[in-house]
Image (tube, rainbow, N blue to C red; front, side):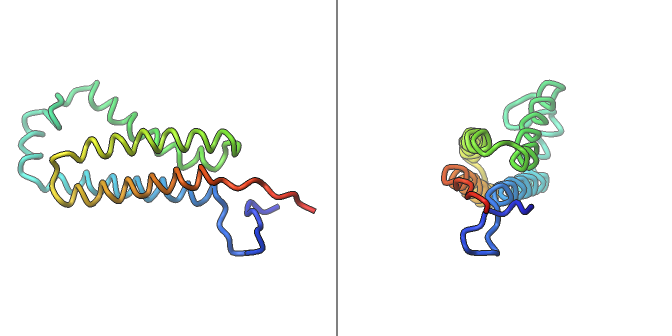
Length: 141
């Protein structure tokens, strides 16, 4: 049994795989943009002062930051196992919330960060698009 829904094109990629791959791509861009920030003197000095983005770096901050990353990381897997109707709703909601936080976090940032954030928002918009246009399963003979 194949997970690909047939529309006459045997090379068509299943919606679950598309959305899951978009979450992976978004997370890669997200990680690299944050890693590149470590090259910035202002970020390094903030880290030395145990601050980041105006927040104190403490257990609460690190816990919430980890939770913020865990959710889209889990979406990679959850997209592959959730029922289509649930999948659709969860992907639209989570991608929309993350899109808003990415835009909010990009305000006043450097150009590399703006570029990465723009790519992240585009990837999240594609998640929403694919979830919104999720095809109905075709009956199998």
